[in-house]
Length: 271
Image (cartoon, rainbow, N blue to C red):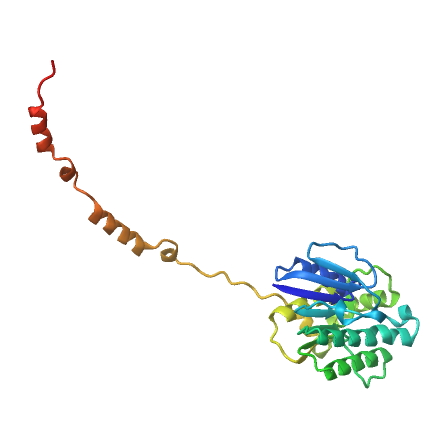
C-alpha cells in the first residue's frame, strides 16, 4: 500500500490528482503541502499548510511518490522574479528535500515546449528547471510535458479560454506531427501521472510528451476463464462416490433378522 505527497494541489491538474489518488485503492495516505486550505476532504487526506519559502526536510514524511504540480502565469505572478520563484525555485527546493528524505520517485509538470535555449521566456524557465532536476540525480524523475490544459478553473484566464476555443476549432487539423500539440484534459494528465507511478517501467529520467500522456490508462484486468471442470471437480465427486460405496454397511450384518426372530420366540409370555 502506497503513500503520496502532492505539492501544487490547488491548481487544475493538482485538484484532480488529489481526488484521483484518494479514490485509488493502491494509496492509503495522500499528504498535500499547500499554502491554503482545500475545499476537498477525504479520510486518506492529510493537509499541511506551509509557506514555501520556509519548507524544511521535516515537512516531508516518507512517501513512494512526490507529485509536483506547481505553476503559475506571468500575469498572476506580476513579475519575472515571482514567476521564477514559483515555477523554478520552489520545485527545485522541493525535489532536493525529497531526495534527502529518501522519496524514490518525483513526478513534475513542466511544459510541452520546455527548452533552455527557447526564445520564449516561459519555455526557457521550464527548460532550466528540467535541466537542474536532472542534474540533482534523483532516484527516479518523471517529467510531465502537457500541452494546453483543458478543464474548469476556479479563476478565469482569458488567454487560456481563447486558446481552448482555437484548439477546439483547429483540432481536426492536428494530425501527423501536429497531433502532439493537441490540448489535453487536466484530469487525463492527473490520471496519466498515477499510471506512470504505478505501472510504467522505472527509469532514472523519462520525459512524457502530451501525446503520450493522452494515451496512458490503467491496464485492463483480464478475467481468468474458469472451465466447468474447475468449477465442479468431477474427479473429487467420483472419489466421494467410491468412498461411499466402500463405506456402505450391509444392514443385514447390523440387524441379524434370524437372531432377532429366535430371541423373540424365546421371550416368555407376559401375565
